[in-house]
Length: 204
Image (tube, rainbow, N blue to C red; front, top):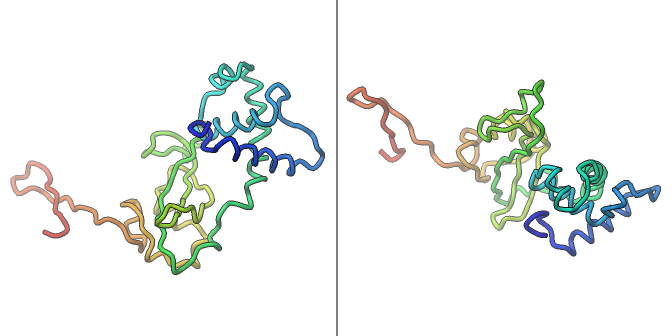
């Protein structure tokens, strides 16, 4: 179960209890044939692995519309239950060194929204910036930005970080010029024989 949802069975049980507390009127909005636990597992698997609903329907021996109803019902409840656990920029410590990177959250390829297309990932989605400590503990998640934008732009657009000093942060080459610790890009120079380019290493 961990490989499909990212959570242990005990964690999913705790999540089910949290979802129950989020339902004020007591209505069970998930498909009865699946129940709450399996509906949560289906939604987590769908969100984490981007699985085709027809495949999930076959695995759980239900119809594709049932899987669709489970995902539609559980997804917003997951957001409400876990919102208080999402780390924000206010939780960042100026004395702590962080590693930052961007990730693409895939979505449908809407023909009228080309701004969602990421050339790097060759698919559509939203770009989210994530910072963690040197030990790997999650420290901050940005608001989503159109997937066509590069990591440096997305980090600069995060208004919540404007009061944070990123000079000690560590990022990959996508953040060169963002006043962070990054690798040094190699410079391409014309070859003397005019046959192409050669790479100029920074220490040469």
